[in-house]
Length: 149
Image (cartoon, rainbow, N blue to C red):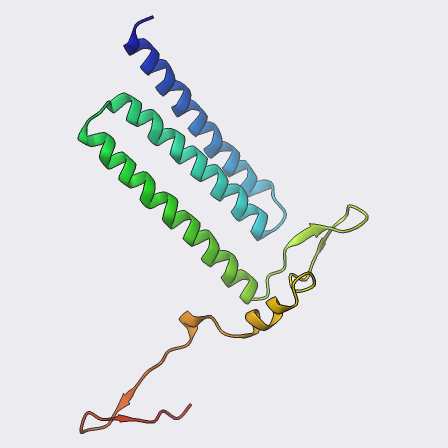
């Protein structure tokens, strides 16, 4: 086998596995019982799928500027995907969404996330920092005046 055939075969395997992970993530999105497990299934499937597809495209592009651009795109997607999933989960917990976990009898039931971690209750009771605005009200002279809150 020549080197080109091996690169094409490795690229085909990476692209196929990437598509498989995307498909599994989509199935997980439809089959999982609550928002947290759905989010986990899609984020893991998308991260693995996208990484493998980018790797397959890098193998096809060779050592060119296209490969560098693909790696930058991969890094951006990896960072933004993790941050987005974390923000979505935190907002859902703050909004009162409860994860569904198996109880002692193996039956799925809603659980209070604050039971195993009591300090979480205090953190969830406070508003997110993005919800609090520190606004300075200026008077006509441009000097800050105290707010009414």
